[in-house]
Image (cartoon, rainbow, N blue to C red):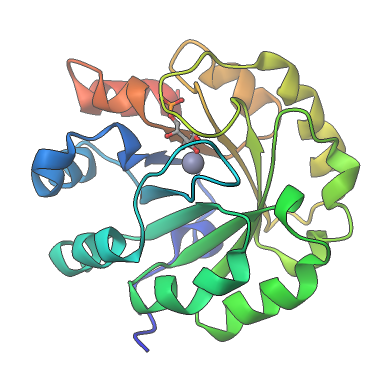
Length: 226
Ligand code: DX5
Ligand code: ZN
């Protein structure tokens, strides 16, 4: 198994991070698209994995992740699993070069064994909560993870409208998280709402359409940073 040796910005940096989600890339030109958002200042690439069960869509899997890793070995890959059986995908994504692996709290009964398996495979660990899921649902998981991610859309597609009400979960989670743990937000994040996200305690902003759809991707990433 290939254990990534790249620096993990989620764990080792303290600054605000912006991760372009390649779900909005032109998949016919995926290499150029990844190069573009990395050159524009993206801190990592966010890889959205959908299984057609946990969410009503299919996206990409370990084969695409491995191809991106081969082409951009220095890029840190944050893999967001929107799948019903995350344990099954730990080893395949570790081999595919993932550096961080996130799973949904709604998909697991006990996050601890999954988090241990992810760490044992050489990756950092994140838990994700859907817009309708209360923050309390991941309190038990907090000691086992490096990041918590608020979904600010219903997962499954890029380009949806931001659900601002989820930001109320930020302070409740931040109060129980250690300063070294990251609070991420994913879905509809744009320069128009990035300041609100940061004010709610989010220090990793994920964005697909607001970066890939921007006429100037570097300017979009800079605007997200604020
Ligand atoms: C949604 C994905 C998001 C998505 C974000 O299921 O988890 O990462 O790509 O896309 P935008 O930023 O367009 O909402
Ligand atoms: Zn995502």
